[in-house]
Every structure is written in C-alpha cells, then in structure tokens.
Image (tube, rainbow, N blue to C red):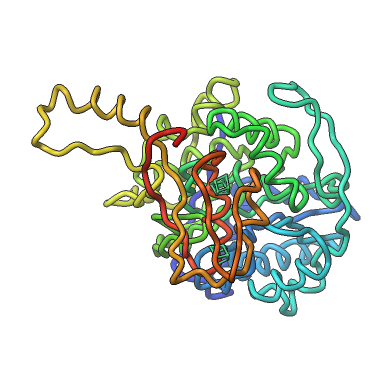
Length: 375
Ligand code: SF4
Ligand code: SF4
C-alpha cells in the first residue's frame, strides 16, 4: 500500500504553503530520512522562464517552504536543480530562474551552478541501458520532486513522472523524442527514467494548475490543493483522479501498469478532496474525433476508432502571432522547422507530433490541426 497525503492549500501565501509542507512531511515521516550533510536536491518544473502566475512553473512559494523546512532540521547541503526546455548552461538557466521568481532570498542561495552531466545505467533496461542525467541528480543523496499539475499535448498530463524528464540535460531532450517518437514508447521511457532517478518524495503543486493546451499554453485553473507521496506513481494516479480523469486512459499510467510499477492500493490521508467537476479540459491533441448525435450511437465508437487512425494532430503556426524567436526550431527533434524573415514554418512531412514546438513557444502562436497521417 502506498500513502498519498492531501492538504487543502488555498493560496500561495507563504505561511499557508509552509503549513501544508509541514503537514505532508509529518504524515510521511520525511524527517526520519534525513542525515547530517546529505545532498538534498529539489527538482521543480521550470519548463521555461515564466512568471509564477502563468501556471507553467512550480511556484517559488513551494520551493521556499521546502527549503525552510529542511534548513530548520539542520540540512545545509541543498540544491535546486532543473534542466528546462532549451539550453542547460549558466546563462540560460539564470534567465529561467529570474523570470520564474526563483532569484529571491530563501531560494537563490541554493540554485544549482553545475551544468555538467553524466551517465547512469538503468536497472531493468526496458527501453534503454543508460540515461544521461544532470550532475546534481547523479550526486544527490535525496531527491524531492516538485512537479506542477498540468495537462500535456503529448502525454495528456504532466505530473510527477513527467517532471523527471527535466533531469535529461538541455537539448538532449529532443533527442529522446526522436528515439521514442510514439507516445506509448515515450511514456515507457519516462517510467524507466523515473526508476533510474528514483525520487524519494514527490510534492505536487496543484494550488494553481493548468488545463487545456498545457504544459505551456493552457489556461490557469485554481485547484487549491497540494499532494505528497513517497510513491510517485501513487501520487500521479491520485492527481489524475483529482483532475476528474480516468487513470486507465493516461498513457504513462498504462505503461506503469504493464511494467508492474503501479501500487496495489492507495491510502489517502489528510484532507478530503472532491475530483474536479467539470474535469480538466484536455489539450486539443487529445480530443477525440467526437461524432455528434447525427451518427447512430452504435457506430460512433468504431467510427472514432477509424478516424483516429487515419488522422493525426499536427502543429500549425499563426504567423501573425509568431515573433521569430526560433525556440520551436531549437527544440524540434526532427529539425524540420524553418524560421525565415522572423516567421516560423513547419511542414507535416517528417513531423512526429511531439509538440515540443508548441510547448516552447513563448507567445502561444502554435495550435493543433488534424490532418491525414503522413501527408
Ligand atoms: S514540428 Fe513540432 S510537433 Fe513536429 S516534430 Fe517538430 S517539434 Fe515535434
Ligand atoms: S517559438 Fe513561437 S514565436 Fe518563436 S519562432 Fe516558433 S512559432 Fe514563432
């Protein structure tokens, strides 16, 4: 049985968040894990630099509260480490930290300054024999995973397991998309990555979440909750239920079940919560073909099945919004995006529908269009 702690957290007011962190860590007895001098690494979600109110990144109040909790218990060897979308170097990450509100007292002293990486073998070899991981993760004695609750164009949701994709160094992330272009393979890789990184505790920021075209271009949904667990899969299952969705329909949880990683049962402790109603709006990429009442009910499911195999979602750029920054081209694993005269264009041929381009576009100029596969 895996325990998930739920605490109603109505705002990012610092003392409110700190009280929630205290309750979570008390419920899971995190203090008993700590040893003097151990290297504790906090892994937030910083997809890219964005102000906290945008709902894209783990709110700095969460980081500040966790750091305070750790320092009050004598921990001094703490690092906040993340490899955002884009480059993994001091200059780029400084901008990300600044824009995300992390360069403030109580966090900035702990921001990672090591931008090297190394290799760690996988235990099972389900999808690969080893991963390249950022050095702070490789050197950590204890990892606290701090994801943000969001929808995701490719993987449907981004919670605890998906957050660990940010342990892969910088622009090696598009390489992983190229190696695992199909969602079912990509999410198996994510589960194996999770087994390789092995976070000790995961604390989810669902105070303000993101629905719709996440993880970067959706809309903020105030959900007023934090969840915490030692078992990241148990946390993801609970968070998906909270979103009003069915865990059986979430790709990485299907993969985790097949790989024998899901807990047998989950013990919920703390505050009761009601699943969101209406449920979180899904990204446009995940919407089914959705035949209406003009199609007989019996035929609707098979018709949707056929259409979903004939059609595929592709990115479509609104050239009037595009500012020509080139971030989409930089993150495209297939290197098919061209930016000319400060406008991006993306052909369908060669596209693997990973939506890294949409994820990284700072002005939300990229939407989703359905088209015939392979054309
Ligand atoms: S164009 Fe966009 S969706 Fe297609 S492969 Fe490149 S990044 Fe992925
Ligand atoms: S990331 Fe967005 S704004 Fe930048 S070039 Fe691509 S489409 Fe244009």
